Image 1 (cartoon, each protein chain N blue to C red):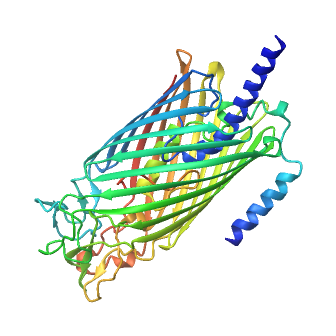
Image 2 (spheres, rainbow over the protein chains, first blue to last red):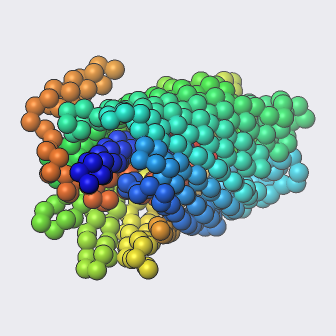
Length: 430
Length: 70
């Protein structure tokens, strides 16, 4: 009897450790393959997470529908396995990089088949943005010893013109009476892009006969992530991460172009963009979770400083405030602010009288921008399991030099149009 | 890099002092809503969206996107 009690308490303490370190690893490996649940599970139990995302931009731009299913099986006290599947569908129109003009513009489709026309004063949008993506991933976690936890996984994502494959691995160790957890992990990804029509020849006119290079290209990404999690006191938990990401290979967007503008502001030609083959991204990430007493409300605040060798630096502040209501209902307001400096080779357009630079993009996502997210989540139990729904508004403000809207061709046009989107997410766990 | 080393040394120094709790003081920290990633799926959706729409990624997790959306 005594023996059995002892065994039981040992198992209990093991699974507690497991849960503790697995948080850090879950955080480390989340983007590539998210373990389904953060909570410790009994042996032989299954945890299922269902998620749905609807993303809709204003003005009939990008619409995305994403469904996700994640299943976690607790194999024994030491190990668990997670399998996750995602399907998403994208439709709508996306800015092609060309500037608005005081006259209508006609563009050849990226595939080379057919064309589309943009009205005077409008930002040119490529309406052929349509794709379906399927992603599968698996993640395995194993408690190596009392204080060490290993996590490893694999990921595959396939779109019509894109294939991404990756593996990841991470180790975490508890210190200081399990008040401190240190972790280190890596991920390696190999991506292949095969755009319809082929890889465009950068800097060459979209209408030129020799504007394609090859059918496909690849890129390799090595991610390293080092994390430290510290329990501050009974109510406060803090996390600090440093991450390094080294990308080599094709990073140009084959569907983006730049206008080549004359001295009167008229775009007489368009050329394909070009980005460097090498990029090193780094970030420092700090997060604090604070449990307010006696209400039990939880404040979750994080800050990220990001920099890379393309000249982009950014600041991100994210905050969530979870308020527990009666009968296991809760609400969670969310605010996020993001601010980014433009990449060195970002150009709104190219000047006809200047030589075409080696690297150039007019993709607003590499320009100077500020984004704001405001949202609210509401959760409540259905049949004893947590259901939650989250509605968010996402505003992107692109900024830049307004005096670039010059000459008869561009006078009065908006070179930096705002974008807004609504995101609806819902989750069910059982 | 200097900044990172500084932060790391501050954290390691403070970690050795009075920070932390005793095992029986983990009641609040053990709650699901106090986990760093309380909803991995939500984090996945958010990371995917912001990776597709902004020039930065990573921080809380690996920066690689695993899709052709950027």
